[in-house]
View 1: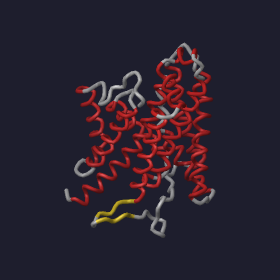
View 2: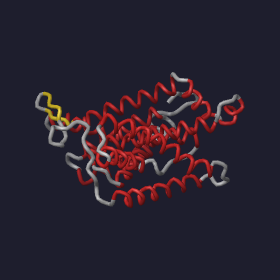
View 3: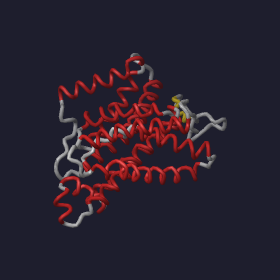
View 4: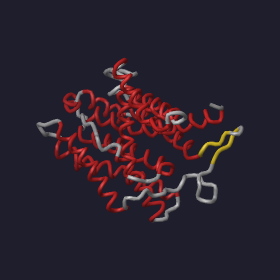
Length: 297
C-alpha cells in the first residue's frame, strides 16, 4: 500500500466513521433518556438526505438557505417522531412495544420516501464542486482527497464537541443527564421529564439526519442508506452500550476497518465489520468505555 492510498483510505474511513458516530450518539441518547432503542435511527440518514434533495434540487435553494431549512426540518421531524412513537406508548406495560413501533416506523418511512421520490437513487449536490457539478478535491503533496469527506469529518468533530459541551457545561444537558439516571428523583426536584425527552429526541433524530445530509452526495440519496444502522449498532456495542464517548470511538474504529478492508477484501467488508463486532463481544463484551453513574458522556 502506497502512502497516497493510505491517506485516502484514512480520510474516507474517518468521514464514514463520523457518520456512524452521529447515528450511534443518537441511539445512545434515546436509550439513556427514554429507555428506547430506536430501530428507525438508520432511516434518519435517508430522511435527512431526501430533505436535502428536496431543498437543494427540487426547490433549487442556494446552500446558505438550504442548510438552515434542513436543520429546522430535522428538529421538527424529531419532535413529530417523538409525538407519534414515544408519547402514545410511554406508559405501556409492554416495553418491547416502542421497539416494535420504531421498526414499523422505519418501514413506513422507507415506503413513504419511495412513494414521494421514487425508488431510484438520486444525486445530491456536493457541498464543494469543481464548477462542473462534480466533487472538488484537495490536493496536498500528490494526495487528492474529496472535499466532501473532509467536510463530513469536520462537521462530525464539531457536532461531537457540541454534544460534549451540552452534557458537560450546559444546564439543559445536566438536566437531561439527571433525568436519564433517575427519572423519578428528577421529577421530584422539578426537572420536566417530557421537556428533557423532547430535547433528546430533537437532537438524536437531527444527528442522524445531518449524517444523511453529509454522506448523501457521496453515496447518493436512497432508502438503502438506512442499512448503515447496522454499523451504528456495531459501534455502540464495541464502544459501550451507554457511553457516548465509547460510541464515537467504536464508530471511528468501524469506519477505519471498513475503509482499509476495501483494499484486499472489498467484497467482504461487511463481513469484516461484523467479525470485528463478534471479537469484541467475545473479548470485551462491556465495550471499550464503561459508562459510570455521573459520566457526562
